[in-house]
Image (cartoon, rainbow, N blue to C red; front, side, top):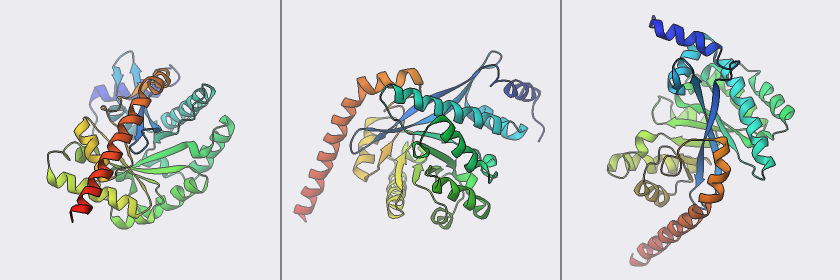
Length: 284
């Protein structure tokens, strides 16, 4: 398919974005729904282009994949994320970071070795890094199994992102060595008002737990949704109701000013749901 002229112009600008210091990372907190603690952050790449303005990854990542510049963007993003982990550590915070990996990058079987060397060089433990892989990237199990397994052997965590929107089978989910299952926001957004969506969300949470995986909900936008997820036993959540993505310099103030409230809120929800379960058990 022929790209429009402005896409070619954007592709040219994108190839120079890293060396022009136009790229940046924002971080969205992931909340532990039992303890109210910060379980980590997801690093989200942004491109602040003088010509095109602030460009989201939904626009420029597919373009980078089409034009062959995705590996350079991935390397920049990982180095920036690891450097930020060290900066937060120096402030007294060890914050796990999740980073999205393109299916094209996963084709390189040497990539796990490269990333391990990068972590060692930076002084960041491999366990502090989670690689998020979209469901659509898992179609060819045979070609991915070796690469993903080597990530896990090196101590890195693996999250299957956007679960429910692709075409991967349950067999693939069982075969690939994930540690976390992220439920796509399209199901989360409708779970409160749509019974079928709620059934799907609860089923995915139970599936994750049955496979020994952490269940994470994406796109939590309101308190009613968060209450429902807690009642369903979801492990973690992220979304604008908890916090929008933010610059790295804003995360530590957010932790200091906000997290105590989340600890109290999650403890109250957990106690309420425990009491409700006990009431129902007694009634029967």
